[in-house]
Length: 123
Image 1: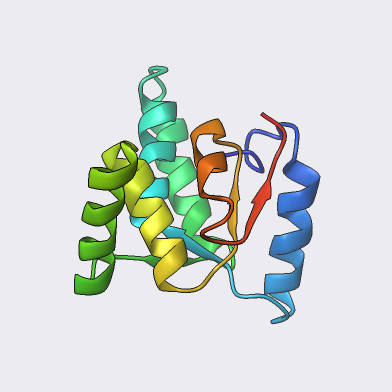
Image 2: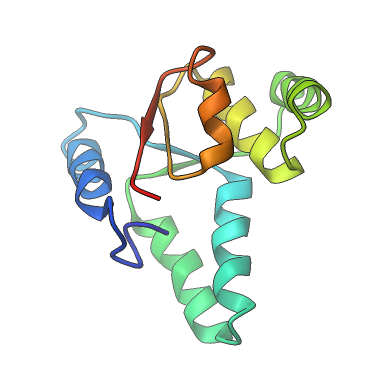
């Protein structure tokens, strides 16, 4: 959403996406991140923009991470122990499961900084 909405930190996301375009980086996004972005736009009353967001995500060099057993278990563990929302737990579990760097602008993720590498965008 930061990149699409041209929010603070969009330049950092753009750099990461450019690296992915030339196969220097692998960019992953949890299906929950896609759903959250879609929902965020849709709740503003703009169904067409929400669909455009979804289609745009499909053409970016982003691999959508779905559901698998190890991420399901990890997400449950995270939710039970850290009190994050379901979506936040899935997103973090996906990053951990793929040993990825979590790029975010979510203050509640800061408590996880010792558990996984992250790039924190401006809030």
